[in-house]
Image 1 (cartoon, rainbow, N blue to C red):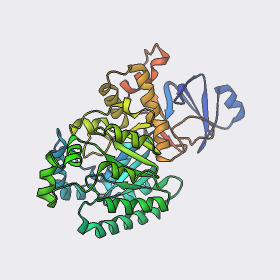
Image 2: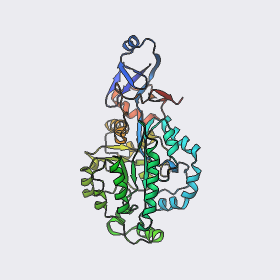
Image 3: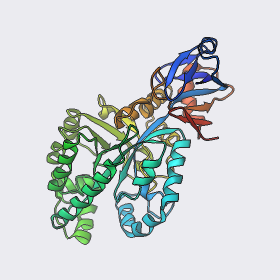
Image 4: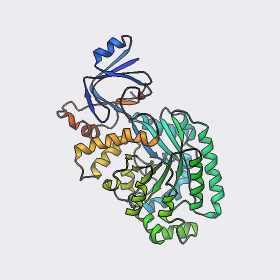
Length: 404
């Protein structure tokens, strides 16, 4: 047994003072330190009088296979970025070997995240994810808009899905990723979702990320018209967006981005078992705009970094800062609390893992963060946590410490 005694505890919905946490792999008791010392006289004591204890975060959408990218890919607009991905992926993918993947996962862990949703296009990240201390929901992705290649693409997806299923345990789950309505043929998406239904798998999909996607799916116009004609010889989209959405009606689904979704599409998604995944930095770097959080309500939403193909960091503290400043109409103090709750409790819930909360019998997944020494207003803890934290002092996953 170990007892940690911080200055504050964020549960995260409440702020606790003058309490300590006794834990092994789970949180066994939350009480004043004196009480815990009587209950567990042999426990190891960690005194953290200048630190804050809060749950680890969950990052439900990232692409680890592109973690070698720093400045190779083009930012500023979605279509030039997409062309650069196609041009450079054959070089970038081999550059992210096992060492690169392990380093990315370690960065995620030591920056305060305990659970991830890993979107895997090729399966090269499977072993690294399976061996990580993180809780991982692993999503083999299906992509392909050309009917002639559908059988090959489906066979590849199916093989990667069943390989991932072999690794399943209490901290590793297998889901299904449908890339997007512009890039996955209706029949291919339907077949992959039949697999999701068979295994009761969580589903994730990029939806209405860019204006180009909106224009192409609505009218076969815009920058995607040239893209599909030049690269794939296609003159019209393979999906109607609303017919595509209907495929997800019976699935638990993480809808990623949703920036350019129209009112009818929002209405459809709100009738589903859905969570919205907001990736503010990726959206900004690719010129896609900002998700209108008023449209999301009453659906749950959470934050994610996306991959290093469209971000400079896999650290959710950076994403929290970006979200805080990209939504200026929200009160900074109350919105900071909302963001912390969405990134911890809601993120874990979205991925289907226990955690993201500090309570008795919850997994001992938490982080210790230094507080500004001149903190005056307790209610502003959430805001100053985001503003002044780049990395926690320590991260615990199932009671095991990680970091310095």
